[in-house]
Length: 208
Image (cartoon, helix red, strand yellow):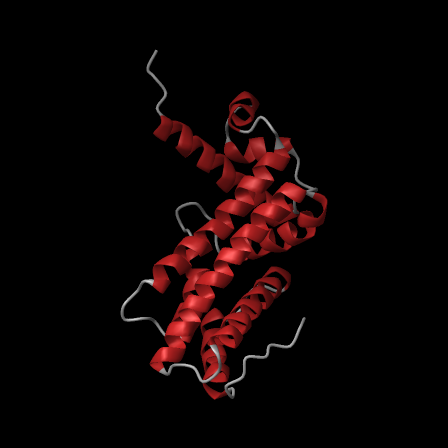
């Protein structure tokens, strides 16, 4: 019998996560059953449980952390990019890296999963901690981007203000996409850049 490689196991695990993401985006975490996920994968239940012995909750955590992990990796690359893209380009690039035509997942799928993840965090401390750690890294990367924009004269306000507005606008865009769909991410990026170019220098960000 041929030996199963780690690469093959990784591909199967990724396939399960992609299938689960489609299910979660359609029906939410709690209206989706393991039978739904298994049916979407086209695999046997034994195969799915072999990769995720913790069942649906383990898959939920994996799907959520994979999605936000892609954003973290993308921002990490942006921070080291020369020349640095402008605010509008950087903002619009985030939904872009969440679109994967090969797996049939897109920004809307991610937005729906994000909203489900936010509602899941209070009842799953493990997920809450993982997501919190990723958010802290995202904030750090955004502050680094904002500092470079400030140094280059791309934005007028302080780096801390730029980073907070960028993050809060992104979260709002995710919520709007999940609820209504069809969000114009490119237009939103242009408007965000205009705001950040015209705001007066100020380190104060109103508490939300």
